[in-house]
Amino acid sequence: MKRILLVALALIMLLSFAGCKKSDGAPKGMKLASSTDLVPYSLYVPEDWVIDEADALTTRAHVSSSDTSSVSIVSYKKEGGAKLHRCMVGNL
Image 1 (tube, one colour):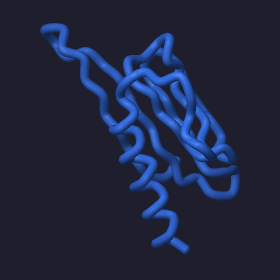
Image 2 (cartoon, helix red, strand yellow; image 1 turned 90 degrees about the horizontal axis):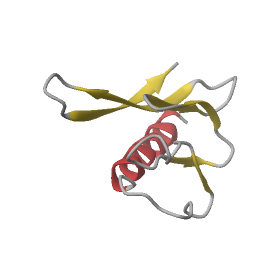
Image 3 (tube, helix red, strand yellow; image 1 turned 120 degrees about the vertical axis):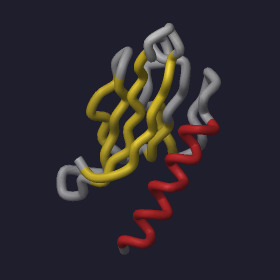
Image 4 (cartoon, helix red, strand yellow; image 1 turned 90 degrees about the vertical axis):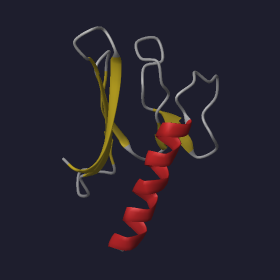
């Protein structure tokens, strides 16, 4: 079960990196977790996942209240103005 979950989270992470451009539609079985008006990327998660946060700095979603496996992207500006994004996979 854990191996399946790890593979699913790895695929979601891969989709988050591949989804860095704005898109009009979510892939089949997925929903948009990020607020595309506020961030320069699109993060898609499975339709049954819970979106915790979607604002100008953080996008975070988890599987369910009983399974806190999650994926999140945090945006921040480095000194000098460069924008960085950090993707994390783990538990809440």
